[in-house]
Amino acid sequence: MIEITVVSTIPSGIFPQKALELGAKLGLPAATDPAQCHTPLLLAYTAEGLQLLHRPAPAKRYTTLLAIDFVGGKNGYRLQNERTTRQPLARAAGIRPGYRPTVLDATAGLGGDAFVLASLGCQVTMCERSPLLAALLDDALSRARQAFPLAAEAASRLTLLGIDARHHLTAAEVSYQTIYLDPMYPQRSQSALNRQTMRAIRMLVGDDDDSGQLLELARLRATERVAVKRPQPSPHLNETRPSHAIFMKNSRFDVYLAVERILSTTCDISPPP
Ligand SMILES: C[S@@+](CC[C@H](N)C(=O)[O-])C[C@H]1O[C@@H](n2cnc3c(N)ncnc32)[C@H](O)[C@@H]1O
Image (cartoon, rainbow, N blue to C red; front, side, top):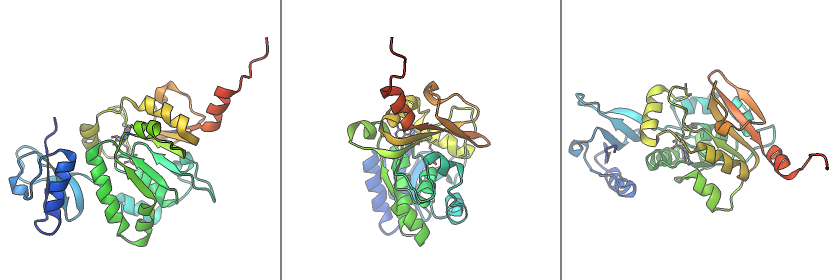
């Protein structure tokens, strides 16, 4: 059981009240003053937005463990300098000149990949089933919507659903041209996210052992393709061979084209007896 208190490090304005409300929503203890908190982890409204803070045993100060910033840092840099449709993620998602698919990012995490696709012009729905990560995403999106026009425009193309994508894909009459999956990597594999960030996410969400099931559902719902990010080298998710793969240094995108699933399930091409 992870012990987390929701709090605001900003003593005035709406933030102490927001901390109490978020605590009630997440079913976590909440306080209006960090001095009242005795857990090693805080989910805190700070001057830089909502953040997960950590205080390792003998230390007196909290340090930032998880924070999402679509406007500055790595996301901001990519937004300003790397908006190319030739990047592997864009090609995996099926972006082409003059064509922007609708995308479901079924494993939103910290939203970095979804934000890239939105900044390239796709309408992206994000599913994140960890309520805490969904809260961080929600706060980062609100800030991005009020930032400079490029960031605000990208954020306006993002919709967040704080639910399990498997429920979204089964319960509703939904379909997306592209469904993107980036489930947690097996423990030892390299990830695009840095080690501390990955450890923190794993502590919150575990190992995504059900991602094979998610792939099956995604392949039923995607009208054009499913793209799965995998560590390189590693077996295909569900041991299902993709239509093709796009390789990067430490990872790859396995792409499953819908047309191949349809052909393989509806055409009997075996010779007549
Ligand atoms: C490796 S992270 C994704 C990182 C993300 N691509 C990014 O750019 O930050 C995987 C995330 O997927 C989420 N996840 C896994 N399976 C899910 C599901 N069925 N529905 C919703 N979220 C899921 C996990 O909670 C975790 O936060």
